[in-house]
Length: 286
Ligand SMILES: [Zn+2]
Image (tube, rainbow, N blue to C red; front, side):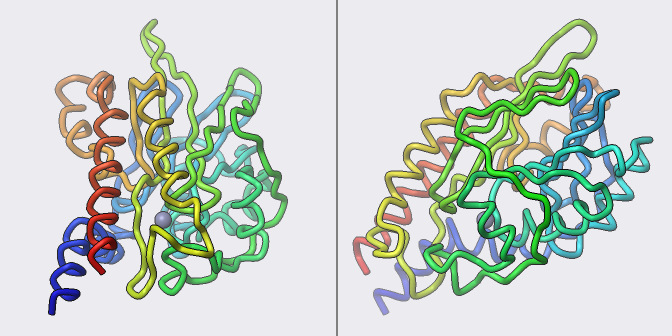
């Protein structure tokens, strides 16, 4: 019984949140401008962001396997061409964020950029056996035309410059992406933050996992990385976990300035830290 209670308590903070959310991966969501050339084109449950320029566009994540049609429709509704996407970036290679990348890549011909650890998974379509969530992960359509990026590498496309920040822990290849957006003479730092949540599948451990022994150290590092980033506008891979909808609700009154919250990344990092502490406490008792 004690184990059951421990699992329930960990579940309340971790797995259940994710399980409950899984049903909403494809919740309808109209696309909308976030700031300057940065647009939200994801679903109600999973973020995808389009960064536009006259030299072509960059798409960050594409949603779950069935999200491609929604994301494509969103891009077109905003008046942009999917065929003008030159790069697709990935936060992490779980099915909810990477499942539609193969379809978007085929339609656009874009090059898909991710960490080397993620690129291996994207190319094979198979989940990582060392992933703490492995038993819950499903294969995705294998992705063509990939290229691995280095930590700190900046991707250039015409006037666009997007920088990779490795944020492993939730997965071994997790990556967050940053760029600047300008609107009305004001330039802001935008962060697309990867998941910072120490989730393990039932029967698996996040800490002391022999297949991924550095998971805890990695996620502590990732949390510190996000906490320290220059961050005015945050979009988290799961939009609600970064507070996107609360800010979106103020957009009608405040315009795109509604999305500026210089404490957003620190709050998001704090959530990840609390989540990790709960996971470790539960695992220490089990
Ligand atoms: Zn994930």
